[in-house]
Structures are given as structure tokens and as C-alpha cells.
Image (tube, rainbow, N blue to C red; front, side, top):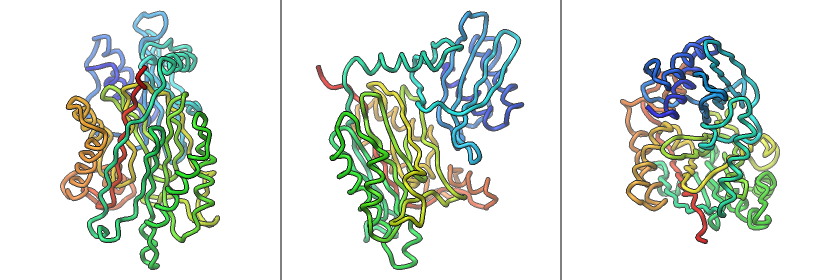
Length: 379
């Protein structure tokens, strides 16, 4: 089993069982990387809600010591950093805020455990300094079967090999005779206009979202996620339950956490100031390298597919040499298949059960998927 998988399983146990279970799971899983014990099992391949990413490796000085860090999200702690350091026979355990710039580069696996932040930042700058990067993007949109005639309520854009955006109009407006899809389409159109007004080498996504929100005056509301590639890596801003993954070498390196007031009640932008505001949005900075893949989607994607489902499609697509749009189509098709499957556990059914509701299977919804291959410009 690879280092990344072993660490990720340990982190999953950590998140599932709390601090006490974390110590036990980690002490079982991490020494296994040196061949002392078998890796932790029994996670059934499921992704944990709120899992953002993990890095780790041998601690400085050797001697069988290991360290890892795992970034997660939860309702009470939107950004929680969990750290486990195994030094010989002893262990330390600590939690704290996630750093403003979250990095999951491969260099982290070789970083000095006593100075992970410094090592990560330096390594990622080295990675990005080689050649400028660009986004090669493609998309797929499958409206809810009952909304095909009106075009559904999702919207998205792809801009100039540098930025993408997605929005999910809140369907409850239909009860008032209002097409929330129009709000989603308008806010994405306004976001695109705002991006075009930004300096190309320093796009301020907070300003972009604020302009898009203030310029959208039709009735309705929606979630939003906007992602831009800069010299510093991926920058993103997200509000609600639309989000994105960053995938490298078959592993999920980063996942944006969901923002919701209650089960199935995401944060949302609305014309005026009567709902959530752009200031409530989460901002992310993730260093990336050529070969990484970004998968962005509305909740129609993430309610029906676990991270490992999405990653598996990406891996197969990359091996087959498929273009981003074909990859997006395959991911969307799988999400629709799972949405119709009443006999399979899904992220939505897991969340519903945790909220005390009886639900099994997927959730039929609009599905938007944007896939971006991060590649270097030719020299």
C-alpha cells in the first residue's frame, strides 16, 4: 500500500473517532509504512465528509518516527488542522487552525516534520517556477430530467485557460414562479465580466464575487464557486455546496468544504442583502503542478459521488488520453447513474442519515462538472 493511501486511511480513522481513536488508529497505521504492522482497514473505501487533504512522511532524524497532518472541515470548526507526530514509542497530538495557504504537494511527504510549513511553501514555489501553467478545461451539464425543457438551474463558465466558475440556482424559488436558473446564469455572466476587468496576473476573486453579486438584480439565489490559476497556484472562492477537488497522481489532494446552515440548506447568494453575503465565502489557495487535475461541480456531483469515485474516473481518463470535456462527461454520467440508484450508499444518503433522516441512494438533481487539466505552456 502506498504512503499516501496509508496516511489517508489513518486520517480517516482520526476524523471518524475523535482524538482517542486518532491516537490508536495512527499508531497502528503509520508504523505499518515501515513494515511493522498491517495497515488500518475497514473504511470500506468511503470518503469522509469534510476531508480536505493530508500530507506526511518520515520525521527528521529517522529512528522510526513519522508525522502527518490532515486538513478537515466540520460544522463547529470549519477549518481544523489535525496533526499526529509519532516519535519512537511516544506520540503527540494537536489541533489548530488550518494555515491560510493549504499545500499538499508531494514535497510534503519528504518534508522535515518539525518545519512542514516552510518546506511546503519553498517546494511549491520551486515547482511553479519552472514554467507558466494553464487550465485546459471542458464541461458537462445534465439538467434534472424534470427541468430539461427550461434548461435546469445550474450555470458555469470557462475563461481563457485561466478561470472557471459554477453556480447552482436554489430550486425552492420555483414555488414562487421564479426561475432560479436565471439568477445562477446572471451571476456567472457577471463574474466572467468582472474577471475580464481584473489584471490577468493578479485576479482578486473576492472582488470578482462582490461585483458579480452586486450586479445580479434578478430574483433568485444560488451557490457559487470561482477558480483561477495564477503564478501562485490555484486560487478559489466558494459559497455554499458547489466546490472542487484537486487531484494528483490518483490521490485527492484537496477538497473544498461545504458551507450549509443545516442539512441540505447551503449558504447562498441572493440579490440584495437578505441572504448570505460574499463576505461569508471561503477563500482557498492551493499550490499546483503540471499534471494536476481540478474537478469542479455543483451538489448534483458531490451528493452522488464520493471523492474516490471521481478520482477513479480521472485516472482512467488520463491513462486513455481523453480530453477534459470527455472526462467531464464521464463523471457527470456516473453521477447521474448513482443519482438514480436507490440501492447504493451515496454522500447525500450518508449526510441524510447523519441528520436523522431515512434516505438511501442518490439524489436526482442538476449536475454540472467542469474538468481542468493543469498543464505547462510550451517553451
